[in-house]
Length: 141
Image 1 (cartoon, rainbow, N blue to C red):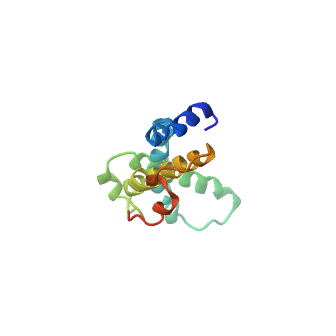
Image 2 (image 1 turned 60 degrees about the horizontal axis):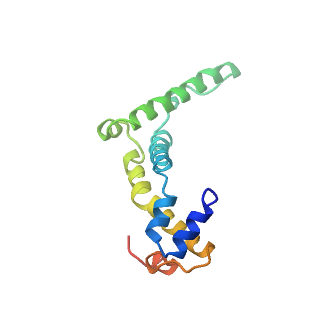
Image 3 (image 1 turned 90 degrees about the vertical axis):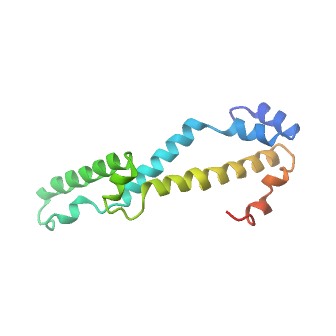
């Protein structure tokens, strides 16, 4: 909103919810969010390689533990950015592409719907029916 308050106000005054949606959509940011969600699912949803290391007995072993954890994260990240077949070989707790699709198909669109409704209210107008808050809590996914 702060980047173009006049633009949002004009669109809201015209009742152009699609225009507001277009103005607030930032495809570059959405792509980064999708990539990051997939990466986090792969990194945090995989058993770390250090699970096979012996117990830590001295301070000197911390370096090897940290190196193993970093290597585990790198392997998970590389495999998450690949195809789903390589991801399935990893024994992930959750499929990274599934998390990415949840963000793409549910979280991002719902967030944008809420933003459109908010921007209409901020500009002094009621949001169109398709963006009404009561609709969002009752529509089936």
